Image (cartoon, rainbow, N blue to C red):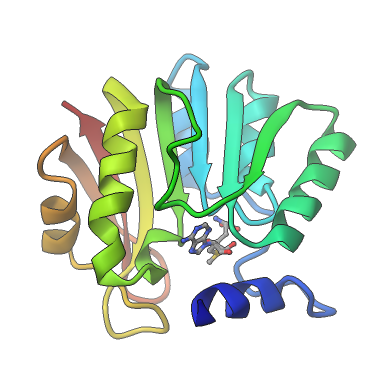
Length: 184
Ligand SMILES: C[S@@+](CC[C@H](N)C(=O)[O-])C[C@H]1O[C@@H](n2cnc3c(N)ncnc32)[C@H](O)[C@@H]1O
């Protein structure tokens, strides 16, 4: 609850929160450049930079964030870009309202701030939504920073029943990593 209030408040400040740069990371650009468009889900999509990015590249894009102000800004961004995206104010651990399948699930900085006890529900939701062979692209801080954080072992264990880890790359700056997982 406190976390949700904190994230929501960050989107009301006069300046954008530090993560809201409007810049799509090269890891996502590379993925998009090397895959056929399909259906993509951005978990904790914030103000929609990456939902709009994938939509511009021909993907059917869905974004979910529980900060209403962030989703309102994401809607403005999609209108300004002239693309269509589905955007929902919702909790990423309660995605029963979404229909599978997705070819790509993306999480840039959301999972690492969830309470550890919420991870199984998040992982079960992803397992239901991502098609076999589909990709889950995750950027997460390591423990010890501003978020709860995850180790490589945490990521492998959280998703062990339905995904396998196919790549891990160190993130730039603070201790963090980009994970590529594939749905079994
Ligand atoms: C660090 S921000 C990153 C936003 C976006 N992915 C980006 O790169 O700009 C994390 C986002 O996850 C959202 N978030 C955190 N926990 C969430 C939850 N349980 N359900 C939905 N959204 C959540 C926050 O509101 C915030 O917009």
